[in-house]
Image 1 (cartoon, helix red, strand yellow):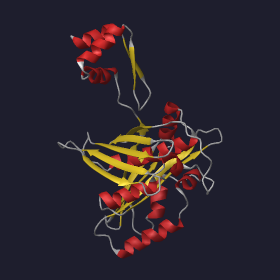
Image 2 (spheres, rainbow, N blue to C red):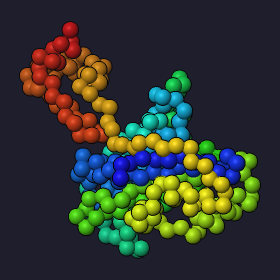
Image 3 (cartoon, rainbow, N blue to C red):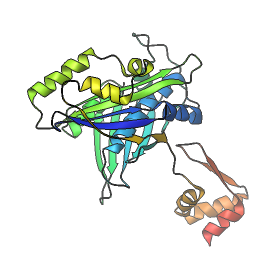
Image 4 (cartoon, helix red, strand yellow):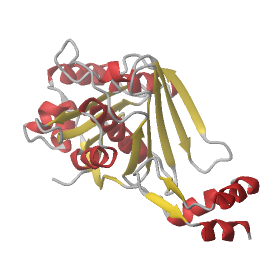
Length: 289
């Protein structure tokens, strides 16, 4: 199945909902960064959240950035997404080996540790919007739920999951975000809470063949859900030699002249996709002209 997300409303528009299947996106991230299983799970959860959160933005050129920084051995995660389902990200440390947690699962919280989540929305204004909150669990879904409540005053329920195969590739990945609008009734909220209490984990649902639409129909059962459309999701990096050249041109001229004096080519690697760009001494000289 190709990766995609679906958007929906329910209860006369007082609930908005998003669900995504992201197995290929997360597997591409695992392959590009050669991540260990616990890092794959953590990065995959944040990539899935980023794709859905990006789709909530209205503008064609809007970009959302999610940054988690923690005291654990993974150190950090950075994900950026646009409003069209394109998402990319990387971990601070791609290889973390930890024993399973008390539930026998990959210890994502242990890999991240104590820290903060920062959400930056660049929607074309002079200054991007930025909100920061402490991590409440390090399991990512709960942290994003808390971010929405504390920074955007939007009660939300977030579910994210990545399931690995025995050979450490990605088996299934995906998630959902359910948001309660201010005019939702108590009955609507009670119904969602009742439905949420009945469902299995995201990975169990996806592994059993459930689609994002199935997941939303289950969570929104009894609230007249209306699917608004789907959108492809993918790990896509927009780096290019031209963009790297532009960044190099902003470096202090003396630094570039020092590189030229070394008489060695330089190599610059994109953090998001690990693509390397090589600049010969002649290329550096052109930047100084």
